[in-house]
Image 1 (cartoon, rainbow, N blue to C red):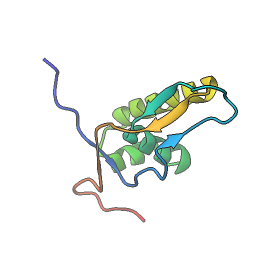
Image 2 (cartoon, rainbow, N blue to C red; image 1 turned 60 degrees about the vertical axis):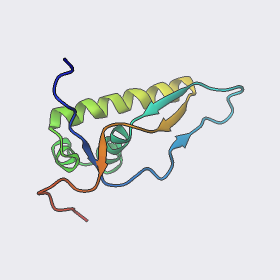
Image 3 (cartoon, helix red, strand yellow; image 1 turned 90 degrees about the vertical axis):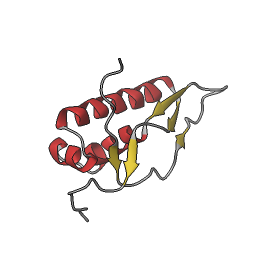
Amino acid sequence: MNGRPRKKRIVHEPPKSFRFSPRGKRGCPGQVVLKIEEFEALRLADYGVKKHADAAAQMNVSRQTFERVLKAARKTISDALVNGKIIKIWGGSFDFGTPSGVKEQK
């Protein structure tokens, strides 16, 4: 048994870039993958400075799920920065748009 199906997270904007690479590191650095919903959590919480409850509602997930996604995103970014790895933004369980019943904020 795999448990219940994963609920898709709502992402409002795709990333402007899907890859970041460190400069000044010789050879082929390792790579980490930041899921698109993790990118969205970072965008809402750290860049947009939203409260976690508000950001969770925008992504159509519980606050606890939002915090788990955000924690995973921060760990991935930290690994890339500390170890000089490429960050690839790709994949995950998400839909672009607005959750049903929630008005988009401008």
